[in-house]
Length: 214
Image (tube, rainbow, N blue to C red):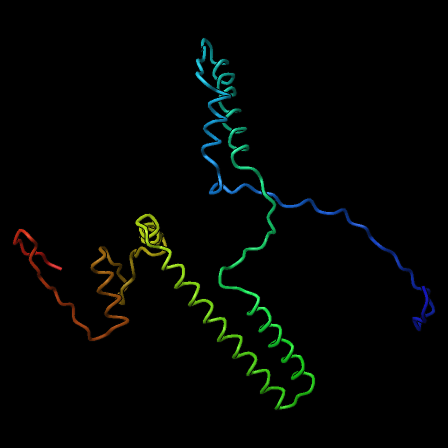
């Protein structure tokens, strides 16, 4: 190898060749063409009548139905190459350029230790963070404007409702005991986080005139 290594040993250079990894391919169930699936399944299965006289016939007839279902689904939902990266909707090319400028300004300021360079780095960093917050707000606003149908709104409402993280359980009180009901849990949270507050029970009337307690 050319060049002096300032050592009494000769340098040995070697190259390791690695086989190219196969592309990552997946099926997205949301992109399934269900019309093609029904056509394929109807053409392969049709009017299926199984003849089962022994336990061994169950596996045979099950394979006759299971195989067309899988092949029909693979036809209606083909595999597509995925990059492996999860792209967020609020990231764009402008944010990428601003982040590169902020990182470059940081390296320059770190090497020079100059107050002016540090000020330039802070200004570039603030510009990036401001654009990042604005992009997130605009993306969320656009998402909310598109969510006008009942299906999307109900889905968003059910996510925190059925999430196990959002449900309150038993809490340990200051005296060492545990709460037994949700009312006791809510009262304990109010006493800890909002000391001195009082719970007010309001009553309103329904259309039939029956008082309803809130």
